[in-house]
Image (cartoon, rainbow, N blue to C red; front, side, top):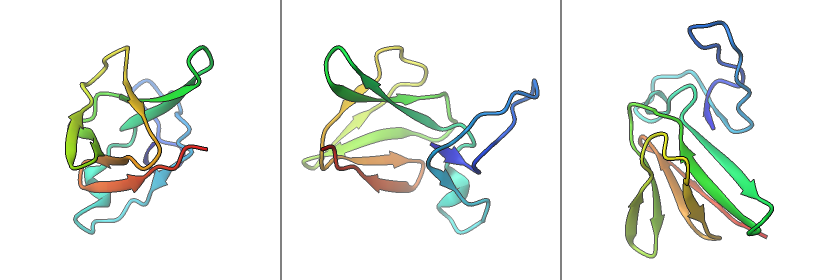
Length: 98
């Protein structure tokens, strides 16, 4: 998840964002980093986890009125549940897990 579909890092490596925000200045999109976060499915547990890829703006999960901070580069990530809202900077995405 990030800004633009295929951002390039300082080493020229391309990252592919399956969820991409536009490169516009609207008070929201520019708060999402080019490589902001990652959702990953764990086949062992059958759950999705959200990882903060080290963005300068916060990554959190909003669940039942509580905010769960996703620490930058934490290898464990945070489990995502259906109905969670993912906050990336000022952008918010609602997740449905089937």
